[in-house]
Image 1 (cartoon, rainbow, N blue to C red):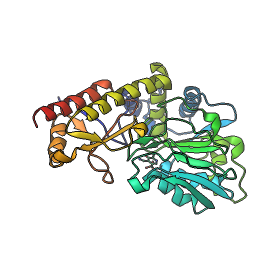
Image 2 (image 1 turned 90 degrees about the vertical axis):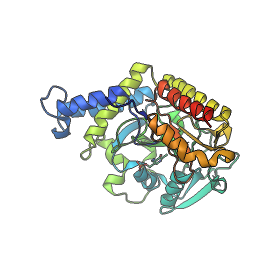
Image 3 (image 1 turned 90 degrees about the horizontal axis):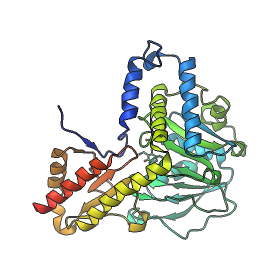
Length: 357
Ligand code: PMP
């Protein structure tokens, strides 16, 4: 029997046991068809039901108002970086630069029109979320990244703006209730809080989708996917099946408000330990700390212990805590499926390492 692993990977990342068990079962025998989900038609009634139920559950869990649709696509969140401006940018859009993913989104938007970068924390290696920036009222939309997976900063709110919002919520969707009505588009790659890699979800305000005049290639047009109930072409069947399992698990657990409470508790005990432990310190402004990705480094006096702690933690079963190369140190990702017991195991590891050094 292998030692229990504690999966802190940033993405693809931990999924609920419910998701993994039910996915494995469907790989053997899907919905009583006697066939694997890997080999059935996406147009068969069993999978059409999965696709529809998953989209309906997203609407239910996030309280999506009338006038919005949920679609699943391929291409990752990175494809959304160009789909958003392709479909929504007429003349000018405003973007907040809070990290690598935000700046990649900005780069794509520039291909389609004027981009106003309203603020950036790049000068401080993205260790905080800029505040007090101005968004021009004639912008087609304001784009922000709700959670900066690499740097561990997060905007856990739906900003009040005179213009409509677009958000990349890849790494914190389903970790809080969202006021969807403020947004034209919310998108998220699945591989953090939803499913294995391979599917991206978008929640789109349908009447915002036909405001640009440019021709849009069929597959890159949100309307195509909306009009065909997210079945214009062959969708990523297996990731969507897994997504449905995660969504059912969220519902059974009590929904996204319950996830938020648990996620906040997990993050709070880990940040408390980082702040208490003489060996470690957090890397970002305290008020902007992410509850999904907790970044920390060794205190200056203990810098040369980094490798040793890495080895010590991995021997104790911790997986995926190495920080992103642009930050260094450590990053513990605490997505919705993270049990408190794993966070406690990491904390115990930090305490033990402190005691022995
Ligand atoms: N946005 C954010 C916030 C991310 O964390 C990631 C991936 N880690 C991406 C976008 C890119 O996603 P993908 O690899 O699915 O294109």
